[in-house]
Length: 403
Ligand SMILES: Cc1cc2nc3c(=O)[nH]c(=O)nc-3n(C[C@H](O)[C@H](O)[C@H](O)COP(=O)(O)OP(=O)(O)OC[C@H]3O[C@@H](n4cnc5c(N)ncnc54)[C@H](O)[C@@H]3O)c2cc1C
Image (tube, rainbow, N blue to C red; front, side, top):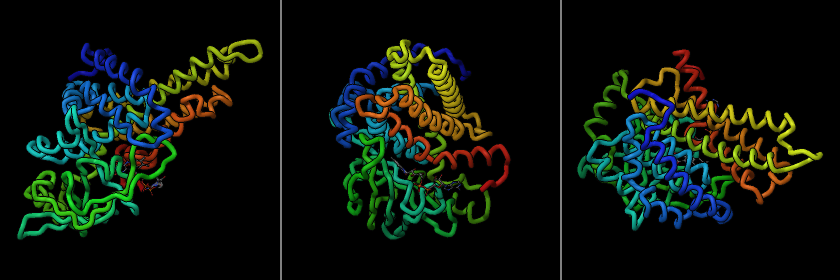
C-alpha cells in the first residue's frame, strides 16, 4: 500500500474519536492518577466500554494496510496523558510479543485473554528485562527447562521493570532455553492467568509515568503447558539447530517484539511532545512581560518554532517506520529505531522547553508541563535506550558490529 500524508477517511475518523476520549476522559483524570500512582481502572473500564481498549480495537488498527492507524491513535492517547495512556497501551506490548512469536492459534487463544472483555477488562505484561540485563538482551538468566515426560516447561528467574507486572492477567516472558547459544538460545512463553509460582513484590515508585504500574516479577518453578511456548516446540528445535550449526536463526526473541513496537513508542513520545508544545504556545500568547506578550520576543517564538519543527520531523519518521513495518519494507537503516530515537529525544527536549516558556509556573504542579517532562524521560530509556537505538542504526548503516 502506497504512503500518503493525506489521512484516509477511516484514519481521520479514528484520530477524531481517540482525541475526543483523550480530551474528555484522559486529560481531566491525569493529575489525579499521577499523584495517586495507581493504575487508573475507571479510565480503562471506560475505554473498554466504548471499544477503545480491547483486542478488536488493536486488531482493527493493525489491519490498516497503510500502517498509520496505530501511531495516530497512540499519539492522541498520549497527548491526553502519558501515564494513563501507558496504562492503556502496556497490554499492547505483550500482545505484540505474542504476534511476533506466536502461531495463529496461539494468537487466537492468548491475545483476547490479554485484554479481557468490555465488561471485565484485563491487563497483560511483557517481561523481558532482568535486574542484571536490560539493554544487554544476551544477558538474560531466566531459564525455561522442558520436562520431556510431561511436555511441560518449567520457568525460573526474575524479571525487572515489567509494565503491568504482577497485576496482569497474562504475562509474556522471555527465557533462556539453551544457555550455550546466548541471545539466540531464548524463547518466549505465555504464563496463563493464575499460574502458581509467579509473584511480584509490588509496584516500583517512579519519576514519571506514575499512573502506569511497573514491577519486578518472580518466577519460581512456574509450570506452563507446551502450548504456551510461542511458535511451538518444532519451530524452536529447528531454530536452535540452525543456531548450533552457525546458520541464521531469526535472531533474539525479545528483539522481534521491539522491532515492531518501536515506531509505536515513537508515536507515544510525539503525543507528549505535542501536548507540551500546544500548552506552551497558548501560554506564550497569553502571558505578558515588559508590556508585551512573551511570544513577541524572538527567543520565545523561535523556541516554539524549533519545537514545532522537530516535532513534525519526529512524526514523519514515526509514520515512515510504521508504514515500512506494515508493508514489509525492510528497515535497511534501522528506521524503526531511528524513529524512536528521534521522537524520544524530542519529547524530553520539547517538554523541558515548555517548562522554560512558562517560567516559574512551568516548574509547578499547577501546570501539566511539569508532569509531561517527568513522563517524557522514559522514552529515551524503555524499549531500548537512545544509545541502543544508535547502535541499531549505526550497525545497519555500516554493516559492521559497532560496540
Ligand atoms: C517505566 C519503565 C517501564 C518499563 N517497562 C518494561 C516492560 O514492560 N518490559 C520490559 O521487559 N522492560 C521494561 N522496562 C525496562 C527497560 O526496557 C530497561 O530499563 C531499558 O532497556 C534499559 O535497561 P537497564 O535499565 O538495565 O539499563 P542498562 O542496560 O544497565 O543501561 C544503563 C545505561 O548504560 C547505557 N548502555 C548500556 N549498554 C550500552 C552500550 N552497549 N553502548 C552505549 N551505552 C550503553 C544505557 O544506554 C543506559 O544509559 C521498563 C523500564 C521502565 C523504567
